[in-house]
Amino acid sequence: MLFKRQWDTGQVVKWLIASKGLGDVLPVLSRVKLEVLREAVEDPDVILERIREREVQELRDLLVEKNLIVRVWDRDQYPWVDTPPPERDPELGIGKHYAWQTPLHREAVRRALETLRD
Image: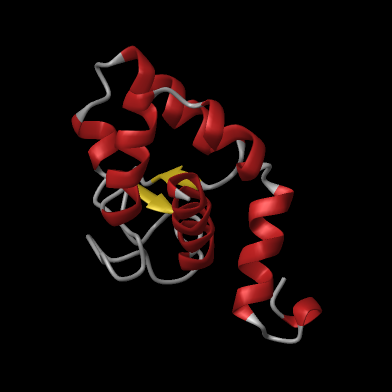
């Protein structure tokens, strides 16, 4: 991804916004889904905290389907090829239960959300 775009993270973020269809999907999300998504950009575990809400379940399913977030089930060494992810790392977008695929995926969602305010 980065190599193909000559290590330009800005270009990768633009590509992610387009390839994940964020420009089409985000404008039609409900107010609740947008609110939770804005919170999830800062802390993806907000999804689990509000998972009883049907709209949050739908948002989670959409984010997983678009390969933007993953559920982190177990941090024991055994199932991981390398080192398990940290318990939490807000800078990288890793929560205890959910994590953004990469910080670039999170940044793509953040930037797409910013365009909705314009």
